[in-house]
Length: 415
Image (cartoon, rainbow, N blue to C red; front, side):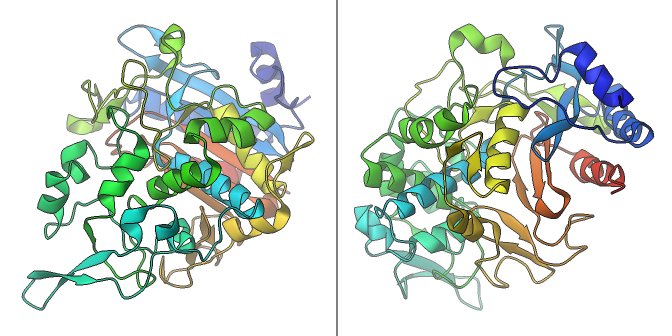
């Protein structure tokens, strides 16, 4: 038996209900390179800890928990540690939208205004040659497809010519990182209705603009299904796949499972992030009212990898089908042309796609993935039959661990 797999078995890291038993591991010498890389970041105090997981053919071939989930409390990282996954939430919300497309309750090219009244007529803050902004009507309705590909022109309200307008409505950076709603007392659809009254920063369908798009989609899911977003995800995605640890908020009884957030401080060393929206957040003690489809979930490496494996397999895992293969195909192939990037990266209905070898490190053409504001990252590479996940809690993350970790995983593939 491969030494790395034996170690996993000996440590009890790959057993558990609903988690596939390990397959043949990565070559021992090459897996050791991944070990050394990750341990170096912990030893150098660039990160507090991490959970790294690689699946091939749905089976774990590499799984490590290193360092601390809470250094000050003396809690070591484990494979069961919970992480704030921020924008990795977007993929699950996008999958929920596609499930409702399959149900006939949402049309891909349907105007968002059919679900959210304030989006029936939207506006854009355009800058002239002097940098002066003027608000003009949008030239076309924002559609579901625009939101899925981040081409609706909707930002997080950080741009100087709109930031004051967003602040006045309790949105944008003044709201606490813009994307963060875990501290909000209102329902997400109330927030999105207010967002629709603000001017956006680009005409729909004319540019890739990263922002509240998937939060708007979370509200659309609620309107189209008649269910709160957390209930819909549980009924249609996390429940069928057995993902018991993927939730918007952490039960108080499980608070010690949630990793602490750190930041890159002076000299590149970690410092513990403060409490509040820009740090530890309100995922345990908070209102528990706003289900942010763009950035609100917490999860484990194992849970999130199982969701990605279902996507890799065309929407089915262990007899549970959450989507059909054609819907998955729309999610995982470029649907935005060159708007996202002119360097070989595209954006599908929920994932960044690799359209040219070399556009994203060693990832093959057809790979897809994304990351989260707390430093988490994932990549699915169908040609390599592989799912790769790295969970850390760094905000801001001043390290290069994400790209180096992905490269170290690819160097371990010799077939």
